[in-house]
Length: 222
Image (tube, rainbow, N blue to C red; front, top):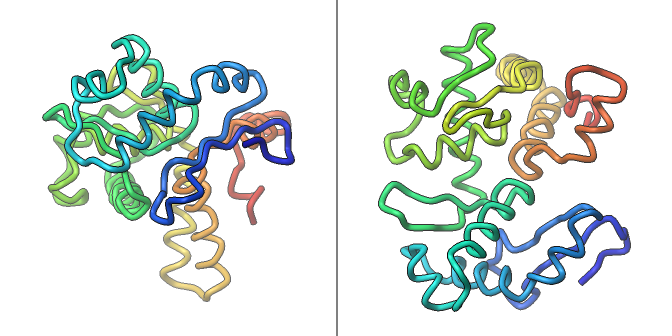
């Protein structure tokens, strides 16, 4: 269904109370494309929500779509629409729950606070190699890649250009929240929700860049 704001299209299973990943926001330029492929997207989402060990071959068999169409759907959902999908090392695809996303993002922030100086580029492998216990062992390459995608832009496969100013501000709020009152803590939680719940929303990012060379999402939400 369309929202009151014509810039967005919502695809939502209103009958599923447990659904934490099926709401998709798309900008106006992508609405027509999404409308055409919505039945296939919805079918893929439904299968992913109901199964935890699906592989690409399983999705292809159950949806009768082509490998190219499946790749397009997964890529579009995962990167353009911030849906929490990742592919584990054993090839299984799954929707990441909000709790899992909070966990991996929290662990990544701990890691970046320990190792980050002014380094703006970081690779998934570098995070895994230097982990040292900051990131829980159950999180592997797929989870780390997904978390970094919310904190930067993947310039090359597995290598991310971090939005360093934003990361440092979040880390600063985190430090303040440990020593100050609930107001600061509230600001920090709000800042984290910018990353966790919304990823990095393109409209807000564009708005911030009009007045500042660095995205200033935290100020927008304060």
